[in-house]
Length: 137
Image (cartoon, rainbow, N blue to C red; front, top):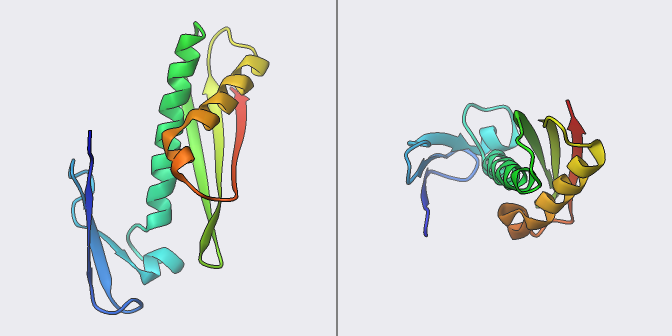
């Protein structure tokens, strides 16, 4: 399986701008720029997209692990904070809240940690830390 996205950039690094399009067209010429990455400009940025990919992959993996343990989550919500420091991504921090009938907090935490260890996107990152905080609703 292969998936793809295309970035187009016009102009200089600081004054220029670009757009991103994904194979599925969920992103379709979605704007990004220096301002959307480093200031408060309109559009997306690579770190935001990494956060979406990491939280999405992690949550799906956790769902499968919970199911394999004999439980069915009512809802899992994962926020991912990507830290960019001095030109390097240094941390990805996952905060997951789950509603899973019948599971203990201890078992939920174990599965949350296992999902972190097995998450394909998380394993792709080469950052100093990937942190997970898991709580049951």
